[in-house]
Image 1 (cartoon, rainbow over the protein chains, first blue to last red):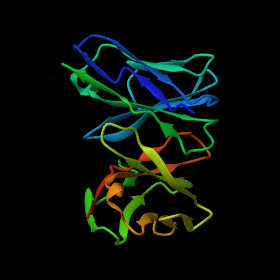
Image 2 (tube, rainbow over the protein chains, first blue to last red):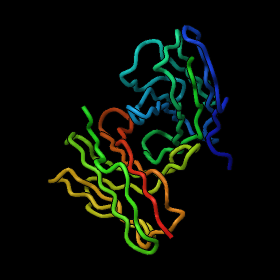
Image 3 (tube, chains in turn purple, red):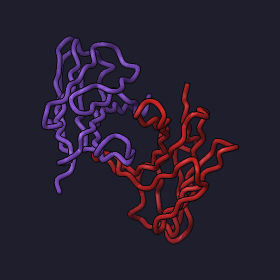
Image 4 (tube, rainbow over the protein chains, first blue to last red):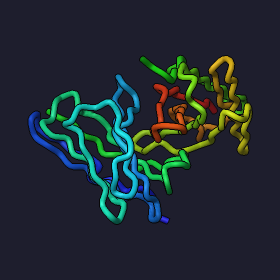
Length: 113
Length: 113
């Protein structure tokens, strides 16, 4: 079966712009989580959605937001981009969020210039 | 404050020998632990996990050991193969509250032929 699909794979944006990243989970998976990976901070939890509801949120500013649709697809949005937002953004899905063996997508590499 | 620490950024091992990757945690509320492997330009891949009610879990060449009193876990790979060369992340979960993975900073494993 298809894995977790993230689009786009690469993105270059200018400071101050906003960006939307997309994630399609494995079919039947209802939990979608987002992580940010940077060389300095490693992998950090952004938020988790289950059945269109945000269940958990990490320690990120309000510029980072997300949503989940009825088909479990998820988007995350970053507004007013800063240089420090340059990172690999990873989406992970799980059947229910209780099974922690999340399946990760390949990520979206965001570069802010 | 890093709650999950991987103090060795890199490890080199000869093919066929044992690789031992270590991870320490500080949060005593963590009760579920996972190891992920990551190749460049790909998302992390789930390897093996262990619940805090166990002290060992084995899956083929991979064994995870948990020492709760020392707040320490390790991943053993026997025998190591060149294809195991990747970055290995340990992650921890407090299953009673937030459904989020707290990751260590990763260890780059290089298996030399």
